[in-house]
Length: 320
Image 1: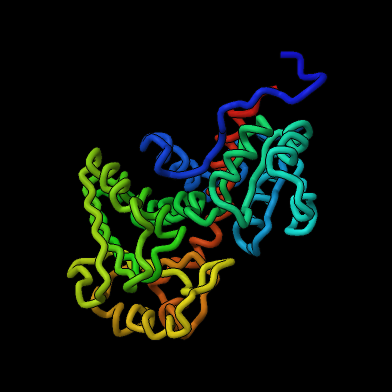
Image 2: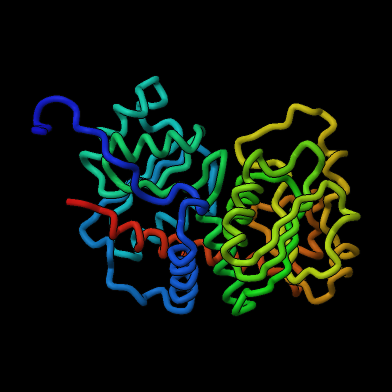
């Protein structure tokens, strides 16, 4: 079709939308590459040279936005940043029309929007360009890559790892579930407050992935049911970015799921992960977050190299 006049034909979506859609070997290539780049940020051939990448964030972000903008520059590309009020999406222009324009000028788009994951797919199909999900309501897949890379850096082979996630079953927990499901023999327990568990279908999907690896994933809503053996404790802040809770007494529901030194003493050798930002005194104490077993700050730094690994892989999806 001649696209000089009229609308271009829709194209299949391209990019990274959900870890559940990646084959395990593709996911672990990203993880291993993240670790390689953490050890040597210059170990690449500037795959984004002469490329322009849009960075669209309509929600707040410190680590993810900085990681992707810096990663684009380090890989030789030029980032074009858009905030929540910069595009005509803010005045009612359709996602489809916006995507057509962005796709005619950009080579790649990194996006965190206030809409669902389908909105990111629409940006890709109508814009005919690769899109990286930098967090949607349903999932935060690049955080999942970062988390596995951090664990691999510190623990090496993750086979048989015992992980406990404690807190709300939010988009970070979703990505973690899909990611840990690919680890051979891993055991993961998601300890979530009643009414704030993993979204419907997520555990089933993760368990289907786990059948290939021999991993085991469970969910419980009682801290008393926490596993006896734990190598890693992971929590996130109670108030997920851009969300609110209908129940005015939600903090009382969450209080038993607080991570403090007493909880960590149940597993004295366990590492601690937190995707940040943290609210000391809510989901975790400063003693744990800043303690000797905390990997949170290594995890935060690795946001850059995991973003670089995802960008590098996405560069292969760019078509001229």
